[in-house]
Amino acid sequence: MKPKILLRVTVFVTLFYAFGHVIGHLTRKQTTDPVDKEVIRQMEQYKFNVNGAMRSWDDFYVALSLDSALVLVVFASIFWMLSGMVEKYSSVVYILLWPILMCLIGFTITDFLYVFMIPTVTSLIICILIIAVMIQVRRHPDYTLKG
Image 1 (cartoon, rainbow, N blue to C red):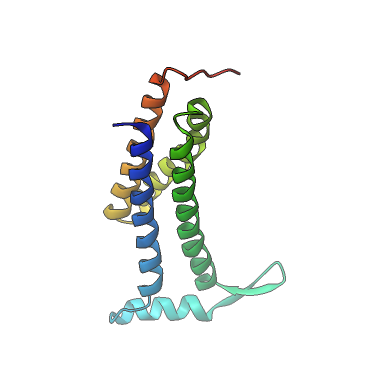
Image 2: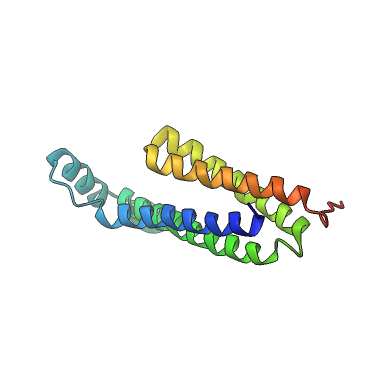
């Protein structure tokens, strides 16, 4: 499969991952379990000073949840842009994919250790797609990595 197509597939898998984060964020308080409700209540109510602002653990949770979704949407848009560049600028695309791959490997590990299998597998699929693109790009006739 061509790198452009692989990157376009990566866009949609990444958007699925982002969508999962948004849905999880929006529904996280919709629980009937009294223990879950109490944990959420305590996370919201206990406030402490953070550099002059009173914040709760729930504030941090909200920020990290939304930050994760935003990062994934930005990655999806970057993958789309790179898909349009890959034929002409294969070396640049290859270099730009490295830091994104490192980030998503980190997501895969933390999802495996601390979350559950759907985000873990989704992140892993994105990593595999990126690696496949990188292998294809290295085989591209115009590929040159000068440093």
